[in-house]
Length: 358
Ligand SMILES: [Mn+2]
Image (cartoon, rainbow, N blue to C red; front, side):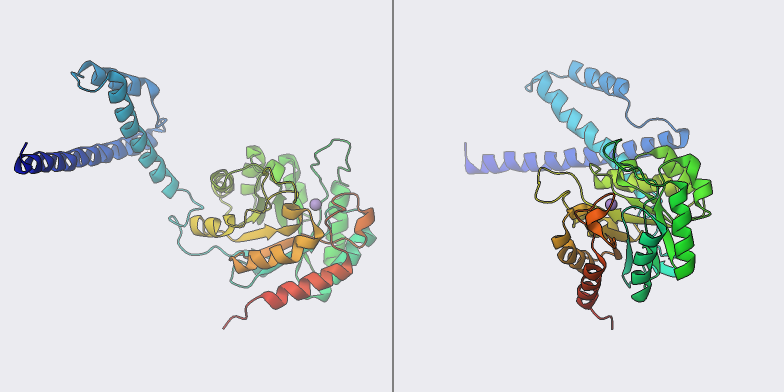
């Protein structure tokens, strides 16, 4: 075979590649059109019966040289790529996405703005244990000029025999202390039925990691006009996390703060693994403020300062950490809450690490 002949054959292959690409692209455009029609009709995008019919008719026409299984495999890949395109179109349409709304959402909590470029700090005890305990922490928070306190009244715990929180009584204590110190209250709600009454006592509804996919709770939080702090589930992907936020915004409430709080991995040196890269990804993909909970992600007091610095350095809108007047006797999370002196050190170190804005 002469070199000239080979060149000619190769040129034909190049032309066919181009033709194939054009056909695949035209097919993709058609598939997208079908996706839009299906969306209008509310029909599921993936139709296995239709796919099987298409594959059968393609294989019937196969005269070789490829095996039927090879032809099926190639076309299955083309089908898959088309379906993924439809899903991308759908993702673009998410209300929490940057594509839908390019500018940052600022969440306003009693006049305090989260996501405006200045970091927000939320501190407070893991659980509300008594008026005195909460008041002591509130005083330290107020002393730093901060505006928010967190505290758990309803505690979803791993074991049913662990302290479950004071419930409504705990919310009343939080409210009383917050009023005295002029602080906004962040507290977790676990039952959709509690939201209405809880709104009288709290300023931010926290949805905890274990409830990130409690869809009825998400919908109920979306239906009220209260900011929501949504924590990432301990085994949730970023996509699942974003979709959980979508459940809230779809009900009309766009006052949502996302909170990375560590995910479960095989690593046991920390309680969870702080997924620090989730912060810039969430900032790119969504228009919502993103905070980092350094207490639950690490489970280690000695890692609170470095992880808080990392969070702010990578672009988080704020940091959350737990403070207790006497962590050794705390009813929950006693290993990782800071005492008041450690709180002073933490705050001093982390705030000095914040780059001064021009
Ligand atoms: Mn805790």
